[in-house]
Amino acid sequence: MTRYAMAIDQRRCIGCHSCTVACRTWNDLPMDIVYNPVVGGVVEGEWPHVHRNWVPTLCMHCKNPECVPCCPTGASQQDEDGTVWVDYSKCMGCKVCVNACPYGMRDTSHTVRRFDQFVRKCTFCKDRREMEPGKDPYCVQTCHQKARIFGDLDDPESEISKLVNNVDTFRLLEELGTDPQIYYIPDLGGRR
Amino acid sequence: MDKKTYQKENATPQYPHHYWEYPIAIYLFLGGLGGGILFLNWIFSAFVFPGIDLTQVMMLPNFVALIVIVIGLFFLVFELGQPPVFYRAYVTATSIIKWGAVLLTIASVGDLIWLLAYWSPAVPVLGFLSVFNFFEPIGPLMLALAGLAGFGIMVYTGVMLSTLKAHSFWATPALPILFTTSALSTACAMIMLSMGGWPGVMATLIDYLAVHEIHSMLHLIDIILMFAELTILLIMILSFLGAGNRTQQRVALRWVKGSYAPFFWIGMVGLGLVVPLLLDISGGALAGVVANVLVLCGGCLLRFLCVWSDDRQPLPDENRYYFRLKASDDRFMTRWDKPGKELERGQTWAYKENEF
Image (spheres, rainbow over the protein chains, first blue to last red):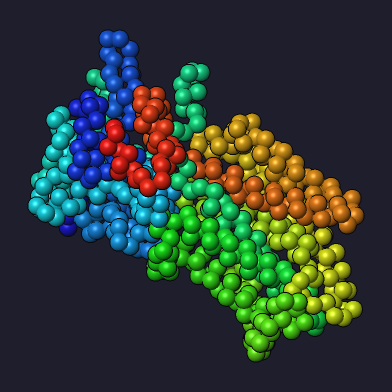
């Protein structure tokens, strides 16, 4: 069965925020919504071995998402391939899922008309993948450093599967038990 | 850990806004208050004084319960992004919000039928509502339903927050206990303030004796509940401060000596609990009324402070990201923080956005 996941290579990320811009462009987001902020950027290490550690974030498309069972309308859903998404036609904007997400990756826009708000979030570009199967999310396609790798974790031949199984990775807030599907390859600044 | 790193990691989060605003705090307070009144009314009518007719004595408290639940529901619906489709909340079976909506519906409908069943024709102005007295045979059943649903609402208001484990301050078993205790305490205060009033028609000596008896019992119960609430509150906050995770410590620090400290120490602990306790213990009719009003205000403040303590564990250097956003483009961020302030009549954000 297909199980989509993303690996983010912090060794390659230079913090250019082009993934953020690409996402905003493709999804036509209101100005107060960011699906994939690139946080971090702190200078670490000691001269001459210094480096900046960027943490590109997005919805973690958790295996055990907190945001899906709490939804009172069934708008927040998870596909069989692991994609967590919101059916806008069912959402009533109660923001329970927004409060349930430990990563802060959902929100309603405050710039759209009052009484016309719904919860928005990253869908791994579900619409792009439905239009053209096999296509990568727009943030992955845009990343000129190839720091984002997207694919099927259950396919042993896929690039992400090989990466996750052979390289040391970590996940954000793993201790909460949500089983996030975004794997970070850490930048150790030349250290092993 | 050096001082600079410590300050950075314990800085107040710079997320754009609270996800839930004041309507949810009011809803949680009013829901708990209404639920508590219905539960206590059922307990007194069915178990404490089973042979005595308390319908006219409890008419105003039940009327108040219906009003506050309806107002609470209004605020809940008002907070929705799309209020006209609020009925979608009844769809899924697993969601805690759905159970809250069902309990609130049962409580308010049961209470309304109970009120109409015992509505006296002698009520000034609205006496014509006594045409619905044909509900009387199912009155006790409706009160039992409303009372049980009311108990559920009291517990649910705390459980709803405590299931959201993204927010460490909410995700604790102490919060539902604190909310339930506070709901019962505020319900005691409201019943003492309103018992025997319009639209109840106090016709017999037994009614007046019942008011006196219930008042003295609630007075004692409220003193015990306030002691319990004070204990739970202080244990919860101080244990977060001493032994909580980093997020819990940050919030507790805000409560104990940060920006929420005046509201916490003076508002909730002082005026909301200690002063009413002293007034209740010292006795006196006027002191009792003042104590009850203070208890209600303290309960409301508790919900506000809890709802605004929605800090989540920040992602690595997330604060820095939002600090940087705020510092580098103040015009953009000013409009983000306060959308609508610069809007004139008839203008839309799409129109304003074109200026950038």
